[in-house]
Length: 380
Figure (cartoon, rainbow, N blue to C red):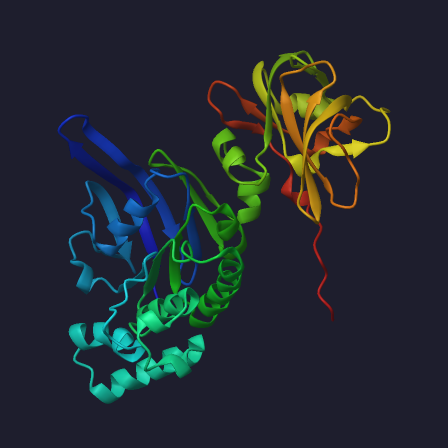
């Protein structure tokens, strides 16, 4: 296995009408040997283009891609020790599972039939599809076809797995099951993996680190917890987390953040963190907003429930400040709490949970501290 490095990788497309289109803009990230990196971002952000450049399916406009320290910019796809799994599975419909999985080895290696058959058998055993070996894709379910596509990559025994939204065509239940299976599989094989998805849940639950792209620019590459609790900017803060973080435009006046509908008093410590910036945005995640019985503190406000979305284990509550009929925010409360439309409630924005951003640049000025995360002690 080997480390994969992207060093100022850029991809520019040329369009007759629009001129140059920068799809990927100087992206740099080191992917460690055996690491599972998820690349996420909105549609058109450059994540699939980045994956295709690693695979050699797209030329690089500038920068370097190195695998195990060797520059592979000019190597054709067949010579790069990578295996790609596509969203569409890309199985040959006239071939059996065995033939689909063996085809790549037959075409690109000089392995004997016996060796290829052994590779295929080991992969089907690993994936639990050994009983499907003689079926054709049309006889398989979506989950089974996805396992075959994974098996075709596994038999290559590559240095790097590249996965382009491989679970997107599965239903929600099967997608959740396959997420777990993919994690176990990657851990057992120890293969460096770059996984592209638009689904932040996949990114948060599966990855060692997340690389977040927007408009072709890398916004942050960090662990899921770091991206969630310590976002680099407002884009990351708003993209990671469901429901999204609440944002309020505020103006700092001394040790107070003044918004249209409320004022937020800061402690001396938090005020120092903000420096001399005055044009700010206050952020707080819905699950950090507390719905309490009565107003008793300086960070408590009156609100009115606008919409309640029951989700079973929790309720997503859309509400407005009691002083406003336009500005809305979202709180997440326990599913066993009975809360109704039109109800007047008291909400609390705990200071330890707030984020503050520079409104002009979007950069984070103050984040929640990760050192407050409670660690579960292992059983001795």
